[in-house]
Image 1 (cartoon, helix red, strand yellow):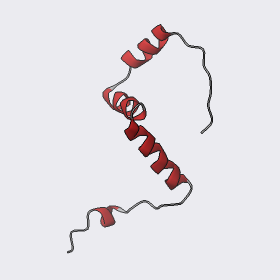
Image 2 (spheres, rainbow, N blue to C red; image 1 turned 45 degrees about the vertical axis):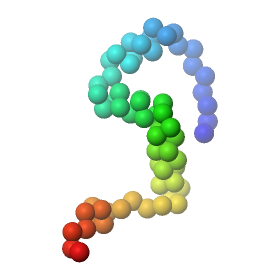
Image 3 (tube, rainbow, N blue to C red; image 1 turned 45 degrees about the horizontal axis):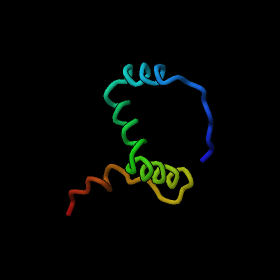
Image 4 (tube, helix red, strand yellow; image 1 turned 180 degrees about the vertical axis):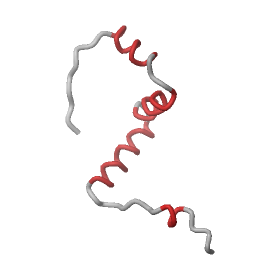
Length: 64
């Protein structure tokens, strides 16, 4: 994954985090944990067509 260096102060980072709504906070938390690494790997797999999305019908198959 490409890396980028950004010169930003801790205070600015704190402001950005304080301005986040709950879903953004959850995303940030996931990205900063091991769960985030797994999610990024899964996303990459989807983008490279190594796996396919399941349809709503496949996920919620109630026929049997």
